[in-house]
Length: 80
Length: 307
Image (cartoon, rainbow over all chains, first blue to last red; front, side, top):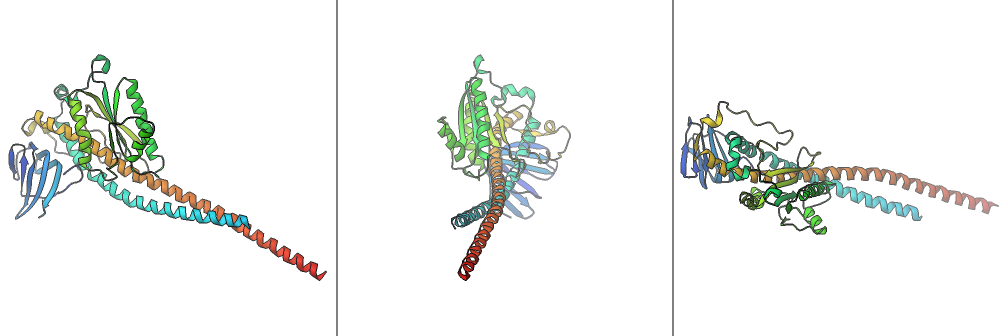
């Protein structure tokens, strides 16, 4: 989600996010986790399909089976 | 007769005015809808940010983060500068909307100056800018280009320099005056202190907004793997929080503007209707009176001829 709106909400099989120090992959059953994000490409996999976003500064929070990406700037680069 | 002609002209002009106000009312209604969607769209982000900050925040941390620190008052060597951001609209015809905002800003300005601060005034919106230009109050930043679709970038442009000078210890505080969007009918001007960030972070919840979503309990922050570390994350997120508050102030003001205009235009349309009723009644009475009088004259003339 970005300050203006929620860009995507739904189920995912994997999330690859641009953390401040490199990309991090998040799969189901990941441990609770909170990291800063840098600038880069965010991938959300849903089975065979992948949504791509461009994000800049924010954080990712993993709690239970939910991943929350809160970013200051985000753009959809390719929908599923 | 002169009187009926004057009445007819007034009726026509009131009719066209009410047509304009009715149209403006409808335009505002549809703009309000969209502006409201933006207010709602901004909530999940704000809620998520406030929640994570709330989890990480700890009263002891205040001393280590300049954005949380309460600066010393000016008489004890603290900074003498403060900043006030006033958000108004670019257009008028919205009732007392802008006047209320300007009044709230002036009150805050006077209060700050009475405490010995030199206040940097930042004004968004043509109405506020024009007012302070009229009273010859210098403004440090004026923005009339934002309009009623503020973006997060606009907020960042306004807030980022202030965050920097606050961190550098040059700024004693940063307040925002904006119109809180309680509902389309209630848009009170609100003064909100943005810097230093107030102790309890989850603030500024609009009435009617659901409380923070239920979250999995159980020692939240403690159990998270934090990368890089709580301090670094806080340092990065606090400016986001400040910028988001400015963004929300602008979005809420934009929605409030349309709400206020819709109300104002609805009142104007209703008043025009009442006025038309009255004018039409007077006009018809005058017309009938004239006919009666002419008839009497004809009858009188005919009687005289019969002689």
